[in-house]
Each structure stands twice: as C-alpha cells, then as structure tokens.
Length: 310
Image (cartoon, rainbow, N blue to C red; front, side):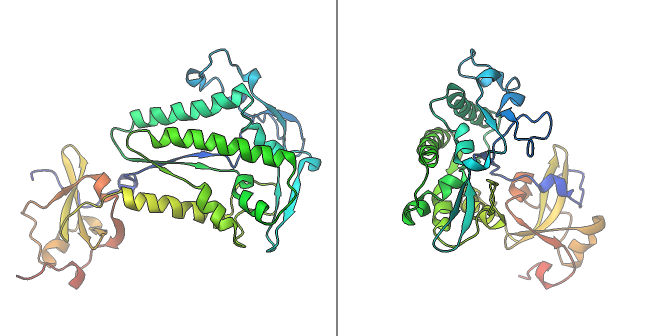
C-alpha cells in the first residue's frame, strides 16, 4: 500500500454517518416573521418565506404563496386546550394551529406533503447509493391521541379533526418514503404514543409543540434501533488499519472490539512499541466504514494494543 501516511485523522473527516437520518417535523410550524409575532398575535403565513425557493417542487405550478394558509401566532388563548391526564401529566394542545399545516381540504397543504415526498426522492437520487433513514415527527396532539381516548377526555372538534387529517397525511407520506430505494423508514408515532401512556414528561406543560429531552430521547431510541440494524460494521481483525483520506493519502488508526483509536502526534513508534511493524500492508477502510466504529480515544503502549504472539 504505497500512500503518503498521515497518522492523525481529523475529527471532522470521521463525523459522517453511514445512514444519515432525514426527518419531517410536524411538531413545529414554520412561519414568516418579518417582525416578532410571538407576542404580537399578528396573522402570518405558514410557508410563504420559502415558497419561491421550493417552487420547482410544487405539484401544481398555479399555486402561489397566497394559497398558503394564514394563522394567528401564537394562537389566542381561547383556542388552547389545557389538559391534565389522570396520572398527573399536563400540557396545552393547540389543535387549530397544528391543523393549519395538516388540513387535507387545503390545496396548499396537500401540495406541501407532495413536496416533502419529492424532496425525499431528490435526497435519494443525490445520495450516491448511501443507505438513508427517514422519519416523520408527529404533533404532540397525535402523540397523546390514545391517552386522550383512554382517559375519556372530551376533546374539541378541532382536536379530533387534526388527529384524523394528520394520521392520513403521515400514512401517505410514510408509504412513499418506505418505497424509496435504499430508505429505511422509522415510525415514531407508535413508540411516542406508547411512551405517552406512561407518566413520562414528553412535552412541556405550555403550548410549545417541541418534545422535552425525554421526548427527544424516545425519538433517538427508535432511530438508533434502525441505524444499528442498517449500518454494517466493517469486518476487520484487531490491529492497525489504513483509512482512506483522499485518493492518494491514508491515515493509520488502531481498531479493536468495535472501537478505533488514533495515533497522537503522528507517533508511528506507538505501532512498533506494541509489536506492530509499519512496513506491511494493513487493511484499508473508507471513512464511511470507520464511522461504524466508536471512537475509543488515543493509542498508547499497553496490553490492549499489543500484537498477539503466535
């Protein structure tokens, strides 16, 4: 293997994942805000700010930003549904606001979901054959649907309509994502709804639709399961390996038990001090392959790095 050797591998070059996740987030509503509207309660359009940028993805060229639904943000308090479940969990639902981006009777909303599917197709076409993980993050109203039913809460009509429309939107988009080549689709509705049936604090107690740390942890767990089953670790024996940095340059790292260790300060003596010769051809890994290993630290002189004696 005749390459210039660079013993230190830059951190940035090993940060890419073999299975990058792409997510559609229903938990937050994008909006034009030429000035702060959080306190003003002014009417804003939900997607006009970026409509021209994504114009080429519109299924109906006749649609314009004027077709985008308009909402008052934040929603007036008389549109809040303050909920306290039997187990003490509390939050505030804003189904009218969330329904704005899920209302299947609106051409702009249907077009928006179609554009998400087309965007996913473009991601796949530009992925160069890389495996992809995609998911859809539901609204917190959707997440708590089963709990609302189980506690026999008297949900307003706006809540019920949101749940029906969003469920249909997610099902249609999920089917399209699932059928894309090289894509693993991760369902988040089921694991989040299961978690919501406990007293876990998945969301804040106010109108904010974003998950808490505990909520995001549930999302991460579901995605991690898919990543672990999708990403294959490169099969190499314990010892030094070359990592392809450029077409003509490699770095050396030490791999063992699913971890990799860097050589500090370009110190190739660490290899010979541990019994590994430096004039042999070791296996070559791509940076993508290396990303399937967990960084273990830096190489030192010691039993963990010593070459086994025959």
